[in-house]
Image (cartoon, rainbow, N blue to C red; front, side):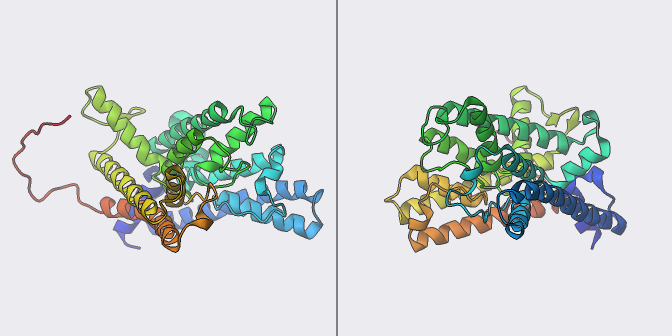
Length: 348
């Protein structure tokens, strides 16, 4: 592994978490594998105990193992023997809670988790960790609010549930709907306002260097910090007492612009190939594919072959696109060979 590659991996996982030498890479790899195995083993044990009373022993163990691994990796796959899928466990706090927690752990990145374990005290966390945790908390609360506001009285979703389960279901959908795609609700029955807002959360996705897809919360956080700094008339982009390098701010803006352009092309293409469907449904499916989330309003099986190929393209580019762009920009030099004379332009 070359020095430049080591530095790139270091930047992806958080520079304060590892050395740039071979030993640092080995420790990182061992730490990732150990953490992933232990986390999924604990979730497996809890779910196995729960499923043991419901299914035959062999099936209970298989269901628990599959659910734990799928949740931690934000895969969204289930093999539960119910036609309604996760909806069968909508009132089960253990299954819903463990699944949501594993989704959360997988979506905030190994670097953030290691930083939290290493420093323990929030004031000692690195800037990446602070930004990821802050943005993740804001997005989760926003998702909960969206479901409670728009679905509270919808008899097909939350309307028939007691208040406490309205909240827990909204929390689960907020955590899972942004990255993993597990769902206890039928998104063909949710309100249009809900689907539109959740589409925005799917576009954002999880943290950089995590198992989640999407634009990434790190990118959004840097863009928002840059916007607020500009509004306040501050030339430097800073947060939590630390300044973010201008190169990273530019990278975040470029990734955001390209991701938006990709989604625009995907959705417009779907509207051309499958214009008979509601535009919001196509928008939902396109963003879900780009964010590798997997949620659906149910129209994907009915799309034309061209429409399904477009979604395949969106899933592929959504998984590798932002990461590839980030790698390319991280390898660029901070020193320009030459610069032109500065001239102001009219904007706004």
